[in-house]
Length: 292
Image (cartoon, rainbow, N blue to C red; front, side, top):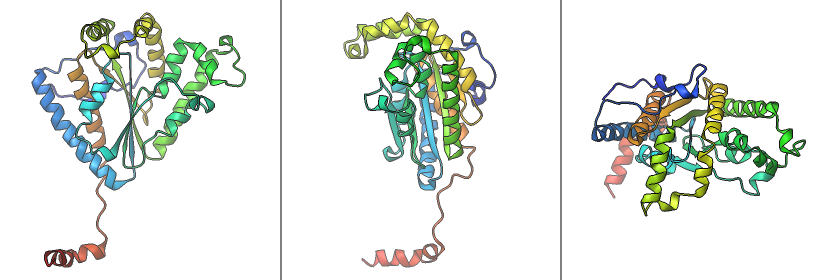
C-alpha cells in the first residue's frame, strides 16, 4: 500500500479543474484497500468516542460531487464503526417551503453537529453556489429583496454568497467545529458507466432519474462552478480536499485517511478525568458492588 500524505489532496493554491486527478493508484489490491480502510475507520471510531466524552469539538464533514460520485456508499463504509449516537447524516435536497422562508444558510446552520459529535452533510451549503449558479432561476424561489428576475443576479451576487459562506465557516470553526470539505472528483466517462449500471441493474433502477441526463449535459458548467468555489473557499480553517473517485474503494480510503490523520493532531482531545473524590474511592465502590 502506498504511503498517503493527506496534504497532497488539500487545496492550498489556485487550481484548474482539468488538472485535478479523478483516479489514484494506491498500489494495492482491492482486498488490501478494504483491509486498510477497516483499520483506519476503527481508529476513527476511537477518536469519535473520545470526542463524545471530551465534548468540546464537533466535526463537520462536507461531501460534494457530481451525481454517482459515491457519496452514499462512502458514508456507509467510512463511518461504519462509529457509535450511532455520535454521528448524524443530513442529505440536503430541494429546499422545502419552510426552508425558503429563511435565508439559504438557515437549514444548514440548524443541522450543524453538537459538540462531541460528527455531522455529515451529503450535499452541502455549496449547492447554493453550484446548482443555483447553473440554474439561476432557482434563486427566484428564495424571494430575496431586490432580486426580481434572473437579470438581477450578477457577479456581485455570487461574490457576496462566497463571502457569506466563508464567514459562516469561519464562525463555526472559531467555536469548535473542525471542518472537512471533500470534493469527490469523478470523470465524465466514469459517470456514464455508473449511470448505465443503474439502468442495467434492477436493484439500482430506482436511483435513476431522466433529470440525471439533463444535468450531465451541463457538465462543463458545473466544472466551472467547482473550480471557482474550490479557489475561493478553501481556507486554513475549512480546507477543501480533492478526492479522486473513479474507484470507490480508493476514494473511501482516502477520505478516511484524511480524517484520521488530521484528527490525530488534536492532542487535547482526551477522555475527561474522574473527579478526585470518585477516583480516591474507586476501591470502595468496587467492594459495594461485589457485596451485592
